[in-house]
Image 1 (tube, rainbow, N blue to C red):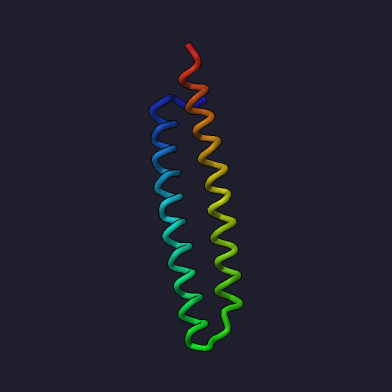
Image 2 (image 1 turned 45 degrees about the vertical axis):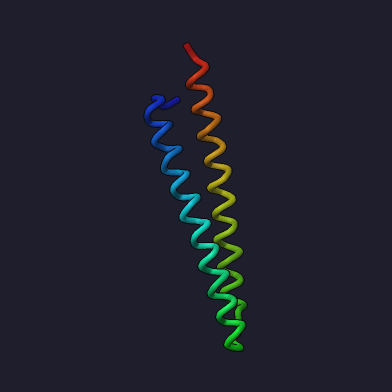
Length: 77
């Protein structure tokens, strides 16, 4: 287990990464809409969106792990 302050710093960083990921997803959706409106193929843009969403899910799992570690740190004497 890491020191409590380190775990909190990790949680803060994970929260920032999650917020940035949500922004990337919104931006990519805008790109896809723009491509479609202009009549362009969106296959690669959709593939990228799926990848960004998968990365976001990995980030969610990582954040949950950090929270669990924080809770363990708080429970130990």
